[in-house]
Image 1 (cartoon, rainbow, N blue to C red):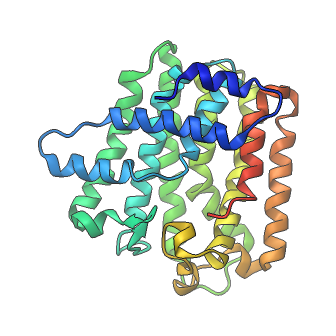
Image 2: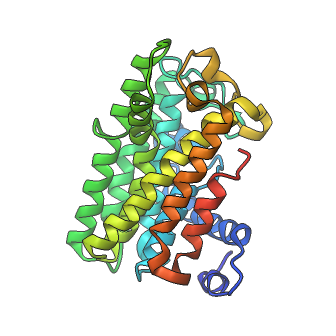
Length: 308
């Protein structure tokens, strides 16, 4: 078991070790996720929910929530229920994204997608179950946080997953498939909502839990918006340059689906440069926080150097 005290000691060191930080934080998140959902009747749906929720991944969204909460003066314990909820919502979006009616993929995180194991009907319901439980988990298990702040977090998550966020981005993404005249503004709208919304919520909710000022929330939200778009640009690049094994999913499917991507609009070199610029702007928002921002700064830099 990874102890919180060990992690806090690591983040206080003058030389910040991102690899160690991510490993330790991921271990804590994995433990919390495993405890969050147990198998009961009907077993099939709980097994399907756990299958995708515990399938691995970077756990970047919950880690961002924990890191922001700590930066703003909070603790891992007060943020962990929200961090788990963010991963539940993210997992729901992946399950539904992989369905034949959406992106139609056979692999996710190196394993067969949920509908390939449990069937399309159970996969849809597993996503629904995770989405509903995310809100319940925040409401019932968050401790040492003012009730009005918990309500604000729940509202933030609801806005993120709805038509103003993930759903809206996914709809426009589907409508844009096969179009050859898609411009950068439309593509950015899609990804600001589809990918960026949940990354933004991860940071914003971590700050809300601590009662951070509106000024701090705005500054941190700007950071999140920039890394969210940079994350998607790098995703587009990796879809072209990485292998199935590196990605843990099918590479090259954007091209086959005739989706507009940043490399298709700008080319690889300009796309990479734009991602670096966005990360630089994100990091600039954190300067005021000094050493407390080391984790968020390092995560931003990781986004443009990752290979999967």
